[in-house]
Image 1 (cartoon, rainbow, N blue to C red):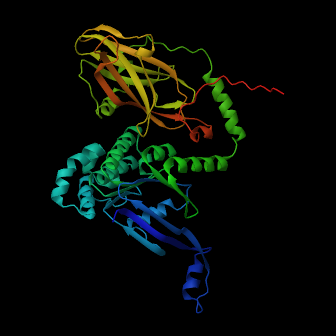
Image 2: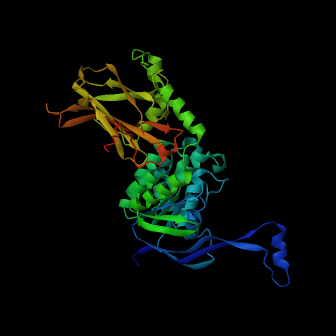
Image 3: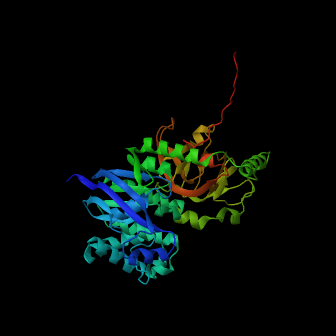
Length: 447
C-alpha cells in the first residue's frame, strides 16, 4: 500500500438536544419519539494521502478539522464510512493529551514511547534528544500538572517528533510557544518531511501552510470544499476570510488614524547611550536563543543583540509602521582586518523576507578590529510587515578577497531576536504578502 491514510465517505453525527430533559424523554419514550436533531460534524468526507505527503488543513472554526483529525488518530469513532491508516501515528491535537498529569515529564516521555510501540531501550537512546529539544529545564522532573501551556507544547512536540512516527499530525498546538520554539519546530518538521514522514498540518497561519505543505484541504460545514495545491487552497481561504470580515469598523479606522499620527515626527534615537548596563539588557534571553544552530570561527562574536524603540527601550512587540533600532554588540576575540555585518528577517517557517548588510550601506565596516575591542552597530528601520511573529538572524563576516564575493563567517546567530508585529487593521493579517511596499500612486482620467 502506497497510501498513508485513506478515507471513504466518513461521517460523524452528533445528536443535538434543546434541553437536557429531552435526552431522557428520547431514551425512555415507548414509541422511540425523537427529541433531537442531527448535527453533521463530518458529512461524506473522502480522500487519500500518500506516504510522504505533507498536507495542510484549513477552514474556519467549526469546519470539522479537529473532528477529522480525532477520527484519524482513533480518538473518535466515525458514525459511518471507512478509514484505513497505514503506519504509526504521532499527534499533537490538544495540549497535554496523552500525558498523565501526576507523572513527571521524563515518565511521560517513556509512557508515550511505549504507547507508540517503542521499547524502553529505544527510548533510552532518544531521551536526551527529547529533553534537549523541549528545553524546559528542571521542570522535566516535575509532574506535568505543574506545566504552563508553553511547556506542554514543548514537551508534546519533542516527544512526537523524536519517536520517529510514520505520520505526524499537528493541530495548532504550536501557537502557544514563543517564536524561537516555533522556528525550531518548523525546522524539525521540514527535516521530517525530507525524511519521508507524512505530515498533516492544521493552522490558521496560511503562510505557514503554504510554505510547509504541497497540498491542502479547505473544509467547510463538515465537508472538504477544495483539495488542491496548498497555494491555490490558501488563496481561496484568504478570500473567504476577507469577505466574512467586511470593512473596518469606525473605531478601528479612528485607531488607525491616531496610530499614523503617533508614528509621524522627527524623533531621533540617542546612539550614545552605551552604558554597560544598557548593553547587557536582554542578554540572558539572547544567549539562550543563540545556542540554536550558531556558527562561525569565533574571531569576532555577538555579545548581545537588542531590538529597541526610539526611546532606547527593549521591545519584543512592534506596531506596524514603527521605527525601531536593531542593536548589535560585537566583541573581537582576535584581530580581524575588515569586518562586515548584516541581518535577515524571517517568518516563523524560516523564510527570509528581508536581508541587508553593510555592503548595501556604502561598504561600511569595522576596520582593524583588535582582540578585546567592543563595538556597537545600530540599524534603524521602519517595520512594515504583516501582523505575525518574526525572527532576526544576525551575521558578521570577513571577506576572503577584495571583491567581497567570498566571506568567512565569524559569527552567525539564526535566532538573535524575536518580535511580534501588531496592527488594528485586520487586512494586514490577510494580505497576500509579508512586506508592505511603498508606492507613488497616481490616478489620471484621460477622457
